[in-house]
Amino acid sequence: MNQHQLRELIAAVKAGRVSRRTFVRQMVGLGLTNQLLANAGLAQMAESSDYKPNKPALQVIDPALKGESRMSLYELRTYTLYVGKMAEAVKLYQEIGFPALEKGGQDKRLVGYFQSDTGTINQLVHLWKFDDDADRRAHWAGLSANNDFREGFVPKFRPLVMTQEVKLLNAAPWGPHP
Image (cartoon, rainbow, N blue to C red; front, side, top):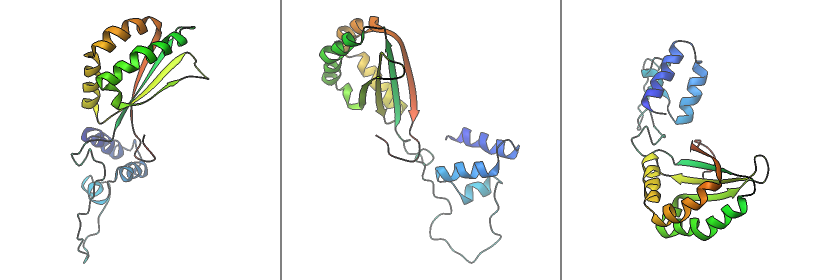
């Protein structure tokens, strides 16, 4: 959540469009508590106390809000192939596409390639993991400059593809991340 999104959420709470409970749950999920809520006028702090904390009242655990890099960005790419073209696509990836990725060093961000077996079939799905959007853009620029991939693989693979879908995914702040 960036500063603009946080301000919009606070405004929604003040306007009554979002409950305080929902807001607090979201803030706790981000690691934001006490001081931020009081500064936003959404919580009251005790008038006075003899307690002298040895740490700041607010400890931000969201790296983006601390000025550090965000959690990883994932890119899910789904290529739906024309019926009957899966075997040819697999052969192209095995013989030309993936070796070109390895040779150019572009395989380092790859989590994995997958083939659909149920649901929508005739799909090749691949998942990529990046540090952030700048890392993602640099990766694809590097792949575009990879002549083996661009000139050897893409012209043969592209005619097999009926549709392409690209989703950018942010990791949830809980659970395992590949």
